[in-house]
Length: 109
Length: 117
Image (cartoon, rainbow over all chains, first blue to last red; front, side):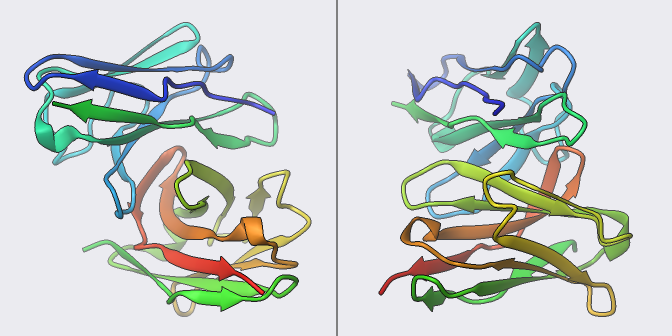
């Protein structure tokens, strides 16, 4: 079955850039999506179609994709950005199975 | 505003079934899919499947397709997810989300399903 691989954790100091990666064999052909989930809350869409930001999402969040890796970048991480981040994408089969990455815990301290 | 409101928490015994509802408001229900996602305690997100309220087409995760059924009632703008033959490892928070391709937005508040004897 298709898998997306993320690092379990990333730590940065406030104001530093944070980068969270997501690797998957189908990413050269399929978009990546990114979700933020804070403790006890439902996930929220933060990046869609590799690099587009929904309205209301701070400009310090950006996405990119190259080859088999998608990257979520937070330029100048804030304490309130501390959360779990999940990438989401589909395989290239006819049945379009979707999958989440394992999630990355971002710590800002 | 666009909103998805899910049914309340459930406690079920192993082998039973559960049916979670997800009532949509603030948009044309048939224009977007509904995706179901679950999250076991302390674990990551797991895609369960998708349904089109427009034509009823579904796409289920392979590991669940023998036990899950997703339906919609367009007259009440409500989606349903039924999971049968429950096991302890089905204990999770179950979410619905309005979906357009990979954009899941917004999400319901989640429904905790506990499977315990």
